[in-house]
Structures are given as C-alpha cells and as structure tokens.
Image (cartoon, rainbow, N blue to C red; front, side, top):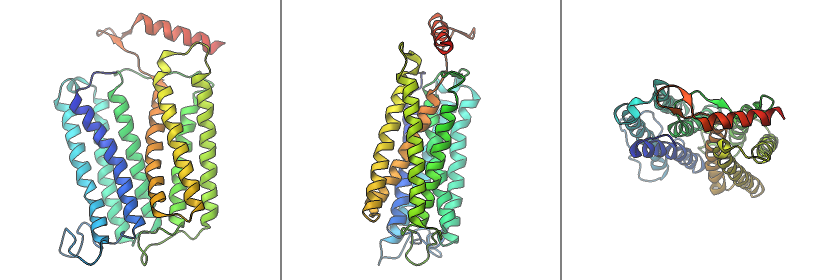
Amino acid sequence: MQKTDRLTWRLALANLVAQIAIIVTGGAVRLTGSGLGCPEWPLCEPGSLIPREMSSIHPYVEFGNRLMSPVLLVITVALIWAFYRRPPMRSRPLRLKRLPWLVLAGIAVQAVIGGISVWTDLHSTIVGVHMLISLVLVAFSMYLMYRLASPDTRPQALLSSARRFLPWALAALITAVVVLGTVVTGAGPHSGDAEAGHIYDIDPVLAARLHAVSVWVFLAVVVLVAAVLFGRQRPDPRLSGARRAWWWVLAATVFNGAVGYVQHATGLPELLVGLHMLGSGLIVAATTWLCAALYYRPEHVGTTGETTVRERRDAHDVAIQHRH
C-alpha cells in the first residue's frame, strides 16, 4: 500500500461514507413524501433558512438531507487541505491532487440540481439526475481512495488484450443498471410528494423488468471476470486486490438483487426501497474498485523510474501466460 498519512486516509474514507449516506438521506426524503418539506431553495421557507413548521416532520426530513451538503463540503475542503499541506501527500503528483477538486465540483453541481428539483416540483427527470450525480460522486470517491493506496506510476493492464474489454463492460453495464434504476423509481409510487411529484408516464412493471435484465447481464460479466481472476493455474499476485474487490461486487450485487426482487413482490415498502438505494451506492463503489484494480501500478526503486526485479519477473510470467 502506498504511504498515506492516517488523517488523509480517514478523510477520504469519511468522504466516501458521506457520499453514500446522502443517497440514503435523499431516499428518506423521497420515501416519506418530504420532497417539498422545504418549498424554497436555497432557503427552506420564505425568509428562513431553517424550517419553522411544527405540524409536520416533512420540513425536518428535507432540511436534514440538505445539511448533508455542508457536511460533505467541510470533509472535502479538509481533504484538499490534507492533499496539499500534509506530508507525504505534498509530494504526490498534481494529477492525484486534482481528484478531491473534482469531488468538490460535483458537490456544488449536486446542490444546484437539488435546488432545481424543488423549483420544478420534483420532476422525476431532475430527481433522477440528482441521484445519478450522487452515484458518480461515489465512484469518484472510491477511485480517490484506490489511488491513495496505489503507487504514483503509469497503470498497466493486467488482462490480456482479448480481455481488456471487461472493466469497460463492467463500467458500461453498471451505468445502465443505475440509470434504469432511476427510471423504475421515477415510474413508481414514491415521487417525493403526494401532490406535487411528477412520475414517468411509462409502465412501471416493464421498467422494472428492463432493470432486472440489466442486472442479470451485469452479473454474467461479473462471473466472466471471476473466470479470469480465479481460473489461472499460477495465480498472479498482482491480481489479489482485484480478487478482493470481486467478492465485494458479488456480495453487493446479490444483496441488492435480492432486496429488489423482494420489494417488487411486496409492493415497494419504503424500508426495502431505502435499502435498495443504499445497495446501489455499494455496488457502484465496489465496481469502481474492481475496475481500477484490473490495472497495475508498479513500485519504483529510488528515482530511476525502473521497476524491481520481482515486478519485471512477474510481468514476464504474465506475458507468457497470455501467449498460452
């Protein structure tokens, strides 16, 4: 593991956890019908930043979700500070230090999209985009953590040329899964507000079936990746991280798939829908980890830019395996 000071690592982990948490709190807003609990943005109510309505929990549920944005802002600003000011992060390359800035930009965009969703009375397209941006931020945050633990060298593909499509296929399929998932939610009964919410004018059963098909195709590619990772007679030690990530992808996919089928069979109870949204964040994080781990960043010796003898020997062995 690349040397990273403990505070920077904890801030990066806190950022990832908070990015997934805001998906859960956003789901709570939608599932409790609190989407317009704060009818204004950036204020909660006309003339007030905080809710003053005492007769309903909806303003407090919505305001609680809004409070996640400043929490994320504080964590990300602290992470940027750690990237630039704390040793040994100060010596890490500029391309790595750009990653928390991208997260910060995404948080700003997310806040604006949240405001637009209020202005448009929770139109499903805007709310769906709001969810998708959160999942993109989860992916960025997971990749940031992976890079913190990796050497600052050029990545090398661990798969043969005939198999290098696999991480790209995983990325494309998980994108299709989450996009179709937002369509299913947008066509269902949980619009975010009993009176103002807009839902898609499509068959929710058809949308759910298309979503399920995309999950099964994704799972088929996950199994194909397993055949590559675990099917070697002489395991490549550089694939150990990818093997760990694969188990997380499988666990998250099975968990969320089971929740999805149960919630569909039981009439979409709010608790299960919320768990399903949590699972979407976990799948995106695990898939990002797996895709990144299918590329290897070798350690350098000193400042010569040369790899160690063991790494060159491993690369030679992998090349022979690919030829056979």
